[in-house]
Amino acid sequence: MQGLDFTVVAPYWDLLLIGAWWTAVLTVSAGALSFVGGILFAVIVLYAPKIVAYPVRALMWVFMGTPLLLQLFLIYFGLVQIGIDIPALAAGIVGLGLHFAVYNADIIRAGIVAVDVGQTEGARSIGFGKWQTLRHVVIPQAIRNTAPPIGGNLIALLKESSIVSVIGIAELVHSAQLAISETFRPFEFYITAAALYYILNLVLEAALRRFERHVEVSR
Amino acid sequence: MDFSLMQRVFPFFVEAALVTIEITVLALILGLAAASLAAAAKMSKSAILRTIGTVYVSLFRGTPCLIQLFVLYFGGPQIGINLEPFAAGVIGLGLNIGAYMAESIRGALVAVDRGQTEAARTIGFSRFQTLRKVVLPQAARLMIRPLGVNTVALLKGSALVSTISVVELTYTAQRFIGSTYKPFEIFGVAALLYMIMVYAVARVVDLLDKRFAIV
Image (cartoon, rainbow over all chains, first blue to last red; front, top):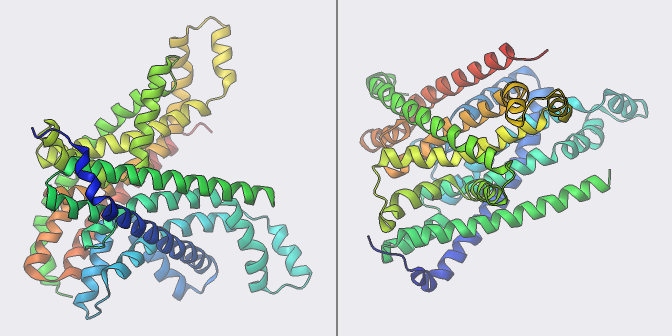
């Protein structure tokens, strides 16, 4: 037994903060991708011709049925096999973004279906086109009604982003691993990393609550 | 696509998938136990128990499962906990999913109409009898779907234990990629096996949900 000494963390504090910063960057960029992708997939599944909708549904089915870790490996190593060499960071953002886009799509699809049909009829009868109705009437309401579960997915994304450390992206876990390789103090550094994740999580939750209240008021 | 390679590696992957199932089942048992205790603690009258339950759920839900596994497996020896990868994987996954399942269980218990409890107490049931004979049977039905969702998440999350060198499905896939450099074929086989397991669990949850539906 080695005993614990959290003072070893101090010299590596900057490294850990940089890692936390990149975790935040990953979460925001993959989160944005998952949101836009989620809307896109939901609209495709509901309205696109079968030849487009079926492949997207198959993709969603595969992504929901397999672990994120495996998807990241496939995107990162698989693309290299077919000659596309994308940087690890891009592979991580695309992997995380697609994974959660699929879950968001499922939620948003249900949200679109749940919007009262009178809204569509009303918009159409005052002269909105099909696309305009979707864009300005149906989707905004669907997003508003599904904001809580989509926010829940973003929180999950923050935590799952730790997995991209396995393809060598320099985020929080990776920073901790670097420090551990020099100090051989896994307990102290992983606990510190966990604490930083916990704080990021609290910040994100508070931001989402504020956003949800804002949406609530403007209803 | 190299189908003969996929055929050759398939038996190894089936064996690895059995390890994935084993880990998932053991972690599920541990998780349900931890979740029941945590849910009971969170709903108890004692402030200390409530705090313990709340802290457990909040810490394990507020940090990544990967970090929890790393603390346990790599950090454990520093505080005198020496675990084999398999045991660390089961305990780490179990405690993690337990925190999520605690909320599923508590949510179902809270969702049972208050009038049910009041009525049972009025006709002379004790607190325990009320829970045992009135609230739990109704809550159990409401738990099936959320606990099923947790179980599917656990099954997919079990891939994480490959990072602490448990030889399960994802670890086996990585090892074969090291020797074959054929990621599409290898990950394709692994993905197929995961999908079979995931959609089998989802189907069972659907059937249970229908079987015990109240309406």
